[in-house]
Length: 19
Image 1 (tube, rainbow, N blue to C red):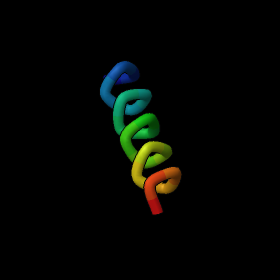
Image 2 (cartoon, rainbow, N blue to C red):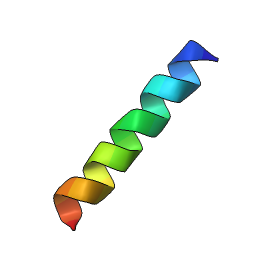
Image 3 (tube, helix red, strand yellow):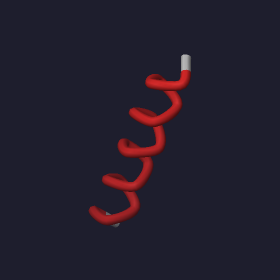
Image 4 (tube, rainbow, N blue to C red):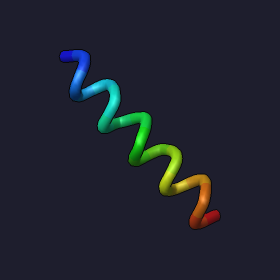
């Protein structure tokens, strides 16, 4: 589940960068 959390954080960071 740690990997999922990391992936989720990466996705959130990507979205923030896009925004």
